[in-house]
Every structure is written in structure tokens, then in C-alpha cells.
Image 1: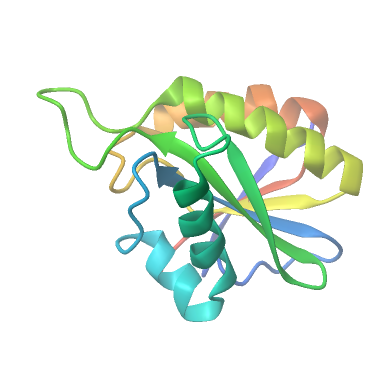
Image 2: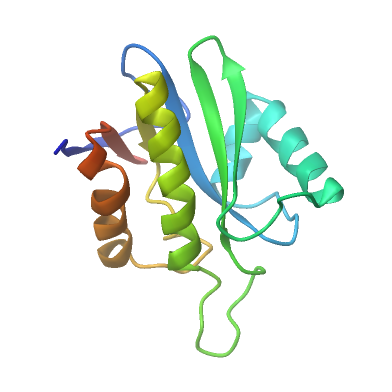
Length: 156
């Protein structure tokens, strides 16, 4: 089983060699404009444009789905739909842990096929309102158990 590395830095600038994938959580209503996506859009226009087109088409756009967008020669962004709407529904935060786990299974398959490392902020723990204590075991079950190298970045 691989291990998870924590770094202080920018998740949009992964520091590993070889193929890399940046994973982040998107909502299921086509909204893009707050949180980590702002940093992605400043660096590359493709992830946002692809996400918006995917939402408009509607095909396979659902909780748990993943869209891979190549942004550089050895770098992809995974738009993972793991958030229902934008705001809390009463006491329930927008995060959907089952959807994140489903999406990370797909990420793990792709990463294994391409021998890619995975890089991310603390997904699901910002605007989605999730808990890292619940996300970390999902990462262990989906990525680390398949020997995928994972780096989690915290901004300075």
C-alpha cells in the first residue's frame, strides 16, 4: 500500500515526476467560480470549459462521475462531481462521500493504467463542507490500496 504525502504548496503545481493528475470536487449543478476552481481557471482554461460543456450536454453528468481534462503533456485535471448543489440543506452539507468514493475508484483505475501520481487540495473540505477525517479513509480505500501515490497540498 502506498502512502499519502502532505505538502505545503499549490495543488495546481504538482512537484512529482511522470504523469500526474490533479483531483478536485465539483458540484452537480454546473456552478464554477469559487474555491479551488478559481486557481485552476487562472492556470488553465480547459478544465472549466470542459466542465461547463459536460454539464450542458448532460450525458454522464452526475454525482460520482469524473471528467479528465489534459492541461499539459503529462498533467490532467479530474473534475469529480462529489457535491450536491452549493449550500447546506438544513444540517446536511453539500458533500456526498459516496460520490467522492465512486469518482476516486475511476481516478484510481486511470492512475494505475497510466502510472500517474495523484495531487489534490483537501478535497471536499472547503465549500462542500466535508470532513477530512471522512475523506482520508476514502483515499486509503480507493487510491492508496492500489499503490497510487497521493500528495495532498495545504496552502501556506
